[in-house]
Length: 331
Image (cartoon, rainbow, N blue to C red):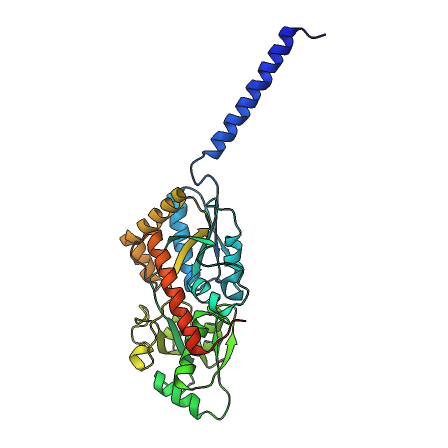
């Protein structure tokens, strides 16, 4: 038989153990963010403008946060795969989304059963990438050097011509369908999985017309294997200032693409503030701005999560108008 003293001593030991476990759990719960690696999910493949920007940001965040920020490329379905992955992730700051704007501003108008709401299912954090356009280009063998020459060539062609983009419902696809609607030309769309694949096939001559991003096309542009015709955006591209915009060539088109960092819905405000501050430090660093320029990328000016939320709402409405003019229906 155990004595009453023994029972009391054992009860005290159990209580002490329970308190120690609770204290340890509390310490773990209060560990400063981040205390383990962070996954940054991308909707783009390697070599694209989104991928290159995200890798620069991830590298600098790894240094600033003291934890690895690991890139997870999930291209396909015009960004839906990557975006849904993050929309369903725990809002703990360890799964982030670096995405191009069309996945949030175009997909809602072109995808009937989109598995996420761009305004409700994500927490805006920061925008490292300044708004910019995409490049409409032709293979070197095409006898055209301007948008008006391309339009005339397509209209006079006795065979069906085609163009490539990085997917149905992508910003490039919409810009081209808008161009078709405004000018009356006919072009068949060939959707690729990534902008890099579109650029490579355009350079190889497998397709003669393409609209692609401002990074994957530049090596081919500089080598002479493709020729820039127009930029679908408000400004000329930093790495190709000789290529005029669509607006400059008579077809007004002001919508631009940008890249930004988001978290799942409900991401705690202190984590949002920490990440936003670190991204803004990158954008204020002369050394890092030079790295952006060396990769033919234009960094954004520092901004707040609220600024990004407002931009998202404004561009969502603007792309809706583009879809309407282009006559596209959600699939």
